[in-house]
Length: 139
Ligand SMILES: [Zn+2]
Image 1 (cartoon, protein in one colour):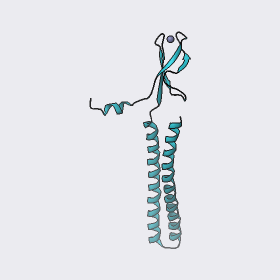
Image 2 (spheres, protein in one colour):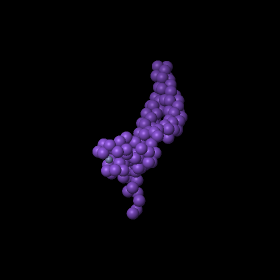
Image 3 (cartoon, protein in one colour):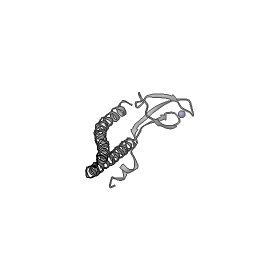
Image 4 (tube, protein in one colour):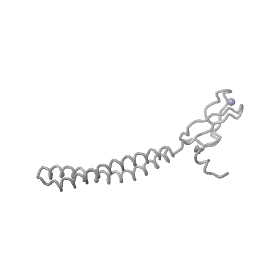
């Protein structure tokens, strides 16, 4: 789990920096909208129109960036396949697969077999390769 948490914290570092930039842009855009209202009330219609356009573009850009960022985070989460542990019974060959747990290592003795009650061994620990990645190989 320590590896996964370090990966997610580096992702959070990048996104928090982008988030600050987006929030600053959003604040500026909202200020432009407030100034537009003020300018309109003062009779400065031209200035009000420009500020209104700037404000709306700013808010729109921020919304777009936030949605993009959210999608990227979701994609990163999907692209991180889970680590799988294969457990095998030496006596009857019964095989079971479960999610990797902290402290798992190959040839570690784990819970008894469901069929013959013999101690089972971890025979493989691997990250599941997605079908899409296999398909990129030409052979
Ligand atoms: Zn067994």
